[in-house]
Structure formats: structure tokens, C-alpha cells
Image (cartoon, rainbow, N blue to C red; front, side):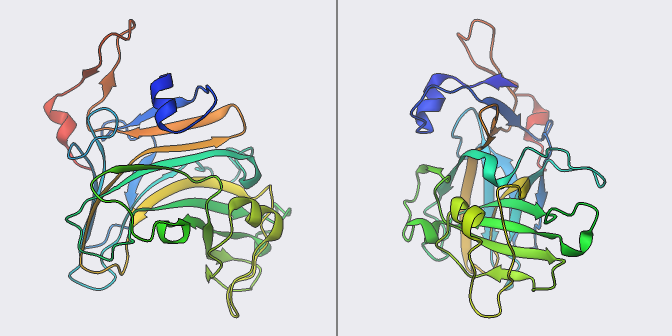
Amino acid sequence: MKKLSLLVVSILSIQAVQAFDEVEVTWQFPNGWEAVNVRSDALVELSKNQPLFGDGSLLFATDSQTNGQDKADFQLLWQQSTTVIDFPERTLGQISQLNYAWYRDSMSTTAAHFIPAFRLSFYDDNDTPADLADDVAGFLIWEGIYNGFNNPNEDSWEIVDLINGNFWAFVSFNGQGTGTGVIQNYNSNLSDWVNNSPTGQAGDPQINFDADTLILGVNVGVGSGWGNTFTGFVDAVRVAFGADDDTLFNFEVCSVLVPNNNSDVIFDDSFECFKRF
């Protein structure tokens, strides 16, 4: 890991001078990231087609031949143990920075508002660690259409600060017996979910969030059911908890090597760099 320069910090629209850890994600060193939920009409891979920093970014492409098959995600789950919580301090109430960059290519023929989504994987034991019966899990999901990107720009990078953005919820497991699926509340930010546990529409799952709700990982992805075609990119995923646990994930095809004098940037451009996930 290395610290990104103040130049990159300013690009990310951070007003104060802050140092955060940069973690390169390459096929050789994915650092926990992996492709998931990739269906037959979609792909996700590291690509040199549209770099943001360095030589690459994360490419998403869909070509909808069959309804519902145009889906692909890229995910990092830092929770690995099945018996203990690996990062108990990484909670909903501790999130202090949240950013990512997306790019929609104008060759896309799907609906104009579709851009890659950003998801936080959540888990809550409802203060009863030994009792799984009342546990809940799922995703808090940021989508452009619920955050003013009804007709987003094409062929340019957009770096978004999500910390005050609107998130909706998908409940994948509910030990409380109040249902799974979408909580249809699309106008609540993270603070709202912590303090108010917004409800959706009649018949939606009913669960309670609080500041101690655990965040187990992050996910970016496209689809499904978008229709037609989509080509786009993601980079610079940043997640911070408190002041000291602050990481930006930089997607590259080849590893970027920075000499000690910082005068040059060298790319490890070996053949192996081009291998796909």
C-alpha cells in the first residue's frame, strides 16, 4: 500500500488535506476483490480501455440476449470468518468517507439513466450475537437515478461523493420473519437509515438499522433487466470508517511502481498483466 498524492485527493473533491491508503487491485493481486453474479450476457474485467489513474479501470459490459442475464458485479468482502466479526469497528455509524468513480460510454443503448450501482453489504445481529434467529443481512444500494443522475453525462468520468447520497435497501436474509426483498424507500441517506430505520411500502420487509449495524464489504455492478447494451467503467472506490481506517481501491491492469524519489511512474507491462479475471 502507499499514500496517494494531494493531487489525487483534490480530484476526489476532499476539502481538507487527508492521507488515505491506496490499494491497487490487479488480476495478479486482487486484494480480496472478485467478480460475482456474472450472468451469460455480461462481463466484468480489468481493462486499459478507459483509465482514470494509472493504466486501467474496471470494465462492465452487457449485451442483453435474454431478459435478466445482463448482470455482473465486482465485490470485496472483508468479513471472512464464520465464527467472529473480523472488523467490528466497520459499522454503518462509523462510515466517514464514501466515493467511487463511474463512466458511461456513449455506445450504450440501454436506458439513459443506467450507470454502475454501488452497494454496502450489511449485517445486524440485533444485539444478540449468540442468537441467529433475529439476524438480518442484505445491501444498502446507491443508484444514480435516485441521486439526480436521471440523464448522466457520457464519455467522461464522474467522481461521486456518496456520504450524503440516497440508498435503498435489499434484504437477503431476515431471521425476524418480516420478509426479504426490496425496502422501497429511495430517498433516505445513511444517517436516515441509522436513526430512523425508514419503512418502504406495504408488504416490504421491516427491519431496524442502527449505528452498530455491521458493514461487511462493498460491491459495484450493473444489471439486471436493463435491456439492450451497456458499456461503462468504475474506479477509485473509497471507503473510510472513522479517521484512521480509510482506503481507496485503484483498479489497474498492471501494477504501478513508484520510485522512491517519486519522479517517475513505471508500469509493470509484462504479458501477464493482460490476463482477465
